[in-house]
Image 1 (cartoon, one colour):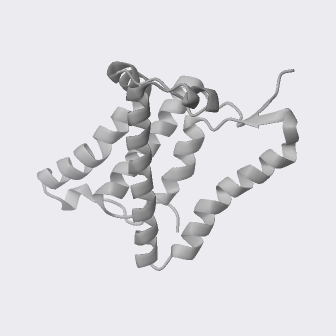
Image 2 (tube, helix red, strand yellow):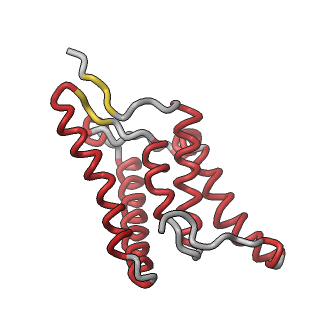
Length: 167
């Protein structure tokens, strides 16, 4: 159920179709996300999802965050609709919600001595398998979250998700 539903066969496609699917829908979003930090600095957007940073957002970063949240919400609604159409909505939604719930339970069990930090690679790796539908938005989203995972690992490494609080 997870992962790409269909494999792309470029040898059966015209050069224009290959350019559209692999160039515009995959490579461009992948490489833009792969260079996330440089792109953010180039357009003047600086924020993280930490509560202290979110409370001190400047206008441009706030607008960028709002646009990103709107796009992600649209992708979520679209993917749930596509899962419903593919008759896999319940297992799809169960896994999509179940993994964050499991992380939440582990965080609660660890107690007040630890805090959760969701790294780029965690977010990208978590969402990649759910972007499985054969259409341009799903394919581009798959590229974005793959780029996000690769960018996170290459820039920051694979640090743990839970850190002990320092007194």
